[in-house]
Image 1 (cartoon, helix red, strand yellow):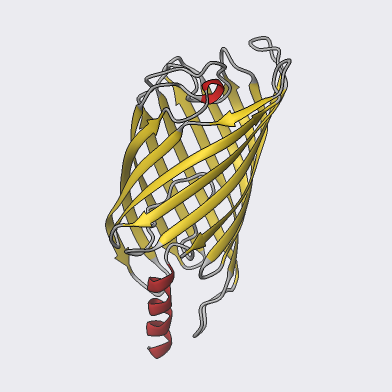
Image 2 (cartoon, one colour):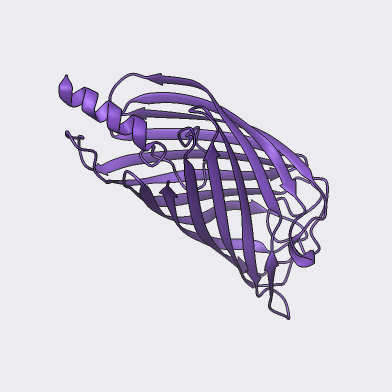
Length: 269
């Protein structure tokens, strides 16, 4: 019993690092009250030419997320991206729009030292803070929900969100860049490779899994991807690697995605 209580106490003081939080699926995890989380993710998108858009090349995003715990169940997050683009005839770079997000974990049921069921809702605004080449120049609201279940070494998560797009970027490349509204739906499965069980002291854990990521737009564009994922979570930091492979893609007015590779780290303060 003392061992179980020790693990529960350690878990409570280190959320969200030990949370089986996958790369692309929003999780109902929160920093503790007064705590900060910094997450940095580099996403490299490789595109291929098609009948709809003859361009090929790549676009790289460096995204910085800063989250603050308002309480144990509520948080605010702001993120922004620096973008490098070599599609078309000229290379260019600039700042993408900022995103302000409020998250509320409205339900949590812990049934063991690690086992947990959590539900959250979130919403916010995409803000026209970017440079001309990468900004929609409009404020767009979004809303969504997420659920996560951890049972032993298995974790599964689901998130869905809707963006009411108000503006169009000058050169659409990704889902959400046009005036079409955007529905995101993501499912993640992670399996804890190591350790098999937690001991008296909380240690870093390795996870492997896969995500199913969907992007549907109101102009009928649709992208479905499988994203194998590798994750390492320590008590106060984490590292992640994800490779997104399209399995179905129907897009207009922008190039087709060939692959996206994401590498990220996050720190709890």
